[in-house]
Length: 389
Picture 1 (tube, rainbow, N blue to C red):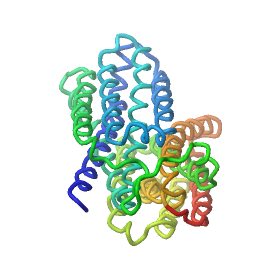
Picture 2: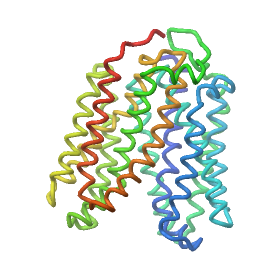
Picture 3: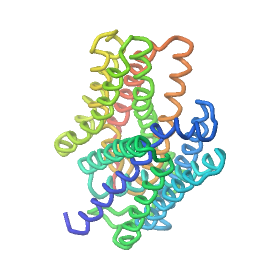
Picture 4: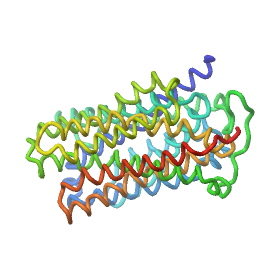
């Protein structure tokens, strides 16, 4: 790896730490935000929807945007957008203003996610992608710690958003300072740059649609387990709040652990041979959640689901250039990241509707069914021949 390549990879890791930081703030800050604006509990949905709209808009067409402005410039502007949105949160006089800034935050986050995934997938591969996504976990874990310490010290929730906004400005400056060093989109270490294919041509490829389905399902499973696991353990199975909270923390930690560990072996287990047992392990974890009852097996199932699921997102991204070819990679990554955002929002919401009608015990079987669906989609992807770069 050349010094230039190592520098850009380090900045990509930094960018994913920055991407994770705001994600961890909201859960801790929400009670204070709700009290300050006089909101009902379910008002959070408006902010999450605004963020999702921005995220999907930014990521869906990322290939065309990267071709026009370049990776480094786009990442600098995207971090600047997130910074402005976070400062906007802290200064918003009304809830509607904060929701409007949610769209800007989603636009920045979608561009960062899709842009960095495209770069690392084409330049470095599965190992670096797994480690980069582990950096997101580091940021997502650090955000709550910062906000908790500030609120415990009697500081306002706005201070936390301003602190992370300042961090985003520093990160934006790093990308701006190196914007000329980033390779053009479509470049690989062994091939010259080529302009991304039109979006319609990429959407005509069957692997693009299978990839969209895979990302929708995977992130839906990940988010659903995190969103409903605590309620299942406490309300349906009688776990003490502290015990249930410990299992949920272990679930999120296991995602990062899985990515770190898989990064070491990704070169030897790339593609279907590595992901097939991971998805099967997710199904095994979901089965434990479904059948574990009031014992520790329920929590252990969540941990197994997270450990096995952690490598799937970055490893599927890493396989994208092989599945669709260099000219379609940036477009396909953008589609996949957009689908992931939709899965992260829609599947937990759908599971909530099911739980409201059938009870919380539906969570385990629903996770198991989604894991089997993901396995079927992955086998469809694995059966497709590689496309030339």
